[in-house]
Length: 246
Length: 319
Image 1 (tube, rainbow over the protein chains, first blue to last red):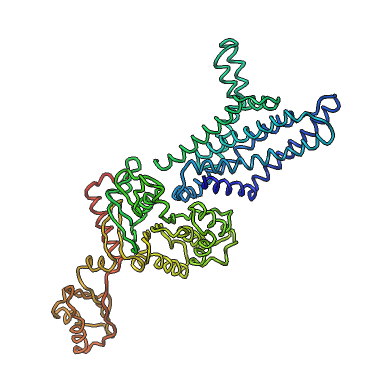
Image 2: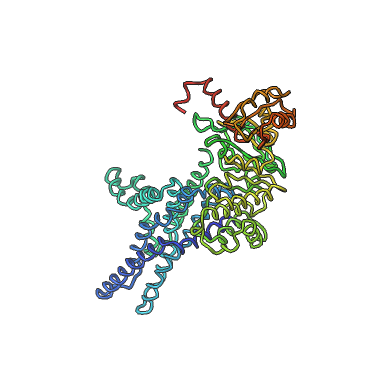
């Protein structure tokens, strides 16, 4: 496990030295900040309850857009620069490398999530919102970020090209984002209790987060995100291992 | 320390190394010599556990690199051909990171020590991206010896360095080779000649010669050669020289300069000198011409290439 920590630490620190991470953070700050101002203003004029859920909805969408960018270099760049040779000839196992890479990016992702706390502070300063759904939403956001980044780590393992890594990353995450929309189609084909529809709905990465955002902590949603993380990291490990056999 | 038996690696239908067998002992610097694409890097990558062999066995520092890869890797230092560095880190950060990955005890001391050996202490806080190629090479070398490995595998360690740096790095390698096993690849023949206790010449995936550089030279030259220079054009000298006992051939390379081949082990130089002086030619220079490793190398590689081409003439264009 010490190797995992060594790798994670390096990756985490690397984000703070990289312009991409700052650009990504700026994007999230500006867009989610404007959205927060707009939504809060609209809610207050229409007499709605103060809430973070609208801001979170946009926030996770932004995370999905920037996730593959944050993870693109994790393994692809090692491959590209030849440093993978260095890591794979050091006494370190492939899973330690992959897990460390993901953990490092996840810690950075959690920092991005933490930036939204400033909106929460503002809400509490000027109104009296219900804190309980926020706990659930933060748990959901942490898991969501973890899953998106794990998928990114996997797609980064597939290629030595950063752009390709990002493109494949989008292919996976956007597909999972729109799975929910397919549910209606399957329902009309197979009837309302269609098993396929249920499966497709379960795989909808945004719908799973929406449950947390409503204040519901559902074990099946937690299992969903952890499974996505585990499967993505497992596949990434196998891909890295396969370099030895090609 | 390094024990390789019948190692074979195929990439699809292409055989990169074919039935390679060799060994290297502790305190030995073994040079791996061969043209590009001969299989040097492939062999080194197998020994360091980066890729598996198709067949055969490789034991490094007492551990099989296939079945006990982690144990073998722990005891190996490796400098790949293109020095892999994290350019966003400083020299210190990079070496510290590598030392941590290798679970080196007393990390700070070891990093300091390695930087001292490669003469980089004053650049400890420089970003690797700002270093020259030679310095990067030295960072790579420092990285390879951080954990005091029993076996060091260096893929072209002096490539891209300026002559002064080459000298320094060779000094470092020679020092390291005293108590460790060093295997280095190079296509600089003089380097192998200077550094290595033993040279393996490899071509098209198999070893064509293996011996100490001096012995290789002695074994392959077959005849002793002497170069002779006189002050005038040396008319008639060639005939006079041919009459000396032990001389097998004489030919003039240009006016006043001769190359003489003699029976090996038969020192005829005093006799030759006498002929020159007594005949009234002004003796300017006379020296023994050893066959350089370069000659041996070219001779071996060419012989080998000719052989395979003769055996399978139609296969070459597709290769």
